[in-house]
Image (cartoon, one colour):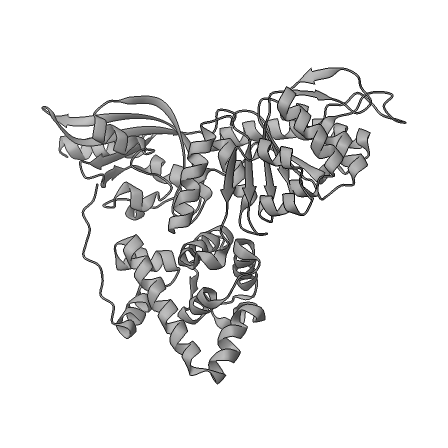
Length: 468
């Protein structure tokens, strides 16, 4: 046995994950521990560029690629990422450049998986916060589940989409997360407003503190006031000294969904908290300092809510320091294949599920009034009835497949439109994936099926792109 073979055997039995890439960023060593941490087989990683395997990473966020580029070791860095199977992983990494003289020829990363430890710590924190909000809600007479305090949150990596408008949304999220400004997010129901709000919190300096969410339309004015602002003993019959959501979120972020449903009187009270950074509990005379970032959201254009008398103009101007608008799904149909792939991983329970071209065509033609949430429900529902490995038209909701099933019988032009949409979806997947295999994965269909559809549309496989 030569020395290299012996060394590889030692690496294979090490308890730490060991991941080595060459100067192009392609994996050349990936031991058993790393495989178990990531939930991936070695053959799914070896010989592939790291960004092809871990799509949530970038050239800047990947410690291996940073060290490969800069030649500077990074010691004991925490990294959270999502592999292409949709599993979120947190590790502590020490990453070192591999050199030959003055030339960097690769990088080696030694990782300790702390995913379960991090999840347990977050769960303990959640339970503590849930106990506090339960006590607060019971004393104000409100349902304990009307508000959510959570630490296991979405991040920027969870915002799925490569359309220009979604790239701009991600850019805005990253930029505003660096500030302490209040934010107003708007978009139709199901466009992902809370996903964006949580991502802002997760990327901000407040990420280590509480994220509290409350739907303002869920409670009547009397209950909402006590829950948000807190109560003081003697303020009303049975009232106790309890902090409101503004105090519970102090140091962190308070998300007020459907803020245009909050009664105007409470909006005025909230405006004072924003201006003075102090809150007075219901029935109290004392003001308490709070340090909270407030993010509101509406389902209509905020200025429209102001014009309709649903939102105070002064509160609007205080909140809309930064305004982020989310497009409806019908305005970013090129993201549908990526979203489908994401939801198949999320709900497929590890099964290798694909979507037939006919279903993808129907998805690309449908108007999606319920937006991304409706698409997710359509895929999740189809999996409940699926016996094979391919989602067909019969598995999807009638409202979605009706466009294909009925209209195409009476109008031949619709058939051509569906073909055009299918061709566009395949072209976009090939562009994003850079190869037939990656495009098939994005579309959620077998490689052979994609090759057949490419032949029908006269499409050719893209030229192999350089790694790195």
